[in-house]
Image (cartoon, rainbow, N blue to C red; front, side, top):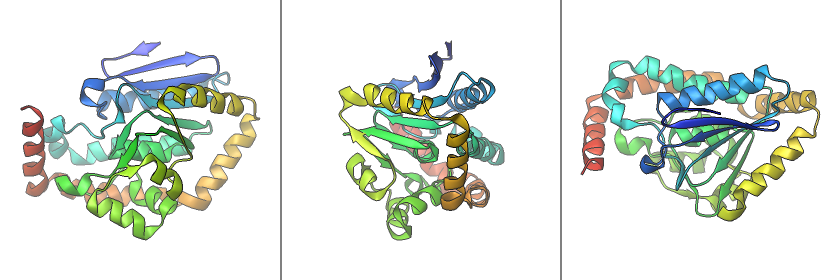
Length: 254
């Protein structure tokens, strides 16, 4: 196992798991989390014995999204921040190995992007997806401008993004955003069952299938990520975001 303060990477047989481990703050996506996901992808792609990558959280949340306590750094180098965000999404969707998201709770912002970039996403009953971007002066990123619309259609995706409304796990399944809901005490077992089924199928066939379906459904992902990057760079430098982010962080410290 490799572990940092906010993420742990561990192997169990032919399955590698990246677990977000900052539950007191709802596992926000920071540099450690991004690096852990990329390291996990590097490992499964380099090792033929590792067949599946699982992403999951600890405690009440999968992840609350980007860590806004570093908002000043985001505004100082927005292009670098957005490139690192886009890289993770590109790597998840482009990996020849299946990526499974085990949503143990809230998946917000860029973390919702991780969930939808994954090949299979299973959520506990009280989990929900959330695109909170506009409420803090940002636009959606993490590929969500494409993956949400590709899964649930333009109208519902637009509403979710503009209004920042919660999408319950049940509604997410109905909309095609995720594939299954299960009881919280069954999540680990269901993920293990899914991973076992994947491990027993030919790796080449899985890779070819993933590539073809992604091309058919989110073939415009690179262009969407570039558009998100360019738009978000402007938003991160905008006084509107800077003021709202400062208020958000100050409120969280009370």
